Amino acid sequence: MYLIVGLGNPENKYANTRHNVGFDTINEIAKKNKIDVNRTKFEALYGQGTIGDEKVILLKPQMYMNLSGIPTKKIKDFFKIDDDKVIIIQDDIDVTLGTIKVRKNGGAGTHNGMKSIVEQLGNRKFYRIKIGIGKPEENQDLADFVLSNIEDRTLIDEAVVMATNAVEMIVEEGIDKAMNQYN
Image (cartoon, rainbow, N blue to C red; front, side, top):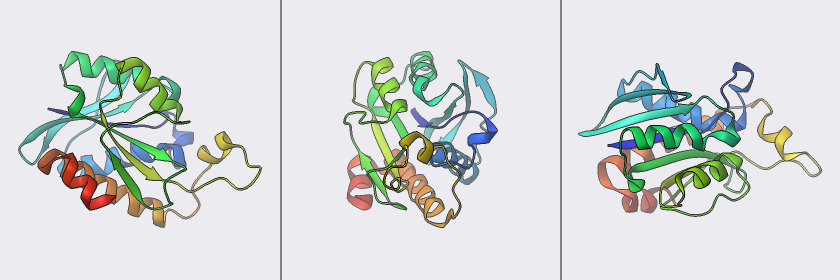
């Protein structure tokens, strides 16, 4: 069983922001694979289903980004999911706008959601898909940038579809195949 976590902030005012592309990807995966993400437990919204022949849990933490690790760990422990069956989907300013990067592991960088997950899980052995959201303009505050509404969603939406396909490839064919395809 895989745990697929999309990072974002729970309030509606954040729905169309760069920081919520993880939630957008969970919504796309859910729609494509007919999985209802409507259960609430452990301060998270989640749903169970399958991708191919593999059971999956789709998770949207319902705590703010910097606390995302708490519900992620609770669900991971409750369902006894191995570290190498956890996929985290996040926004990333260091990935080119409209593209994705697939990684086996790594650090948290400046991303507060990833910092929380690394801290709560106690390791960096989980997979991650980074969605490029562009960079702030010179002298623009990073928090203001990632929490601002996306005016033109064309490239972001294309990256969300790529991230959805990458998740499916990881689940069905393995992380190495997805890294070769998308990096």
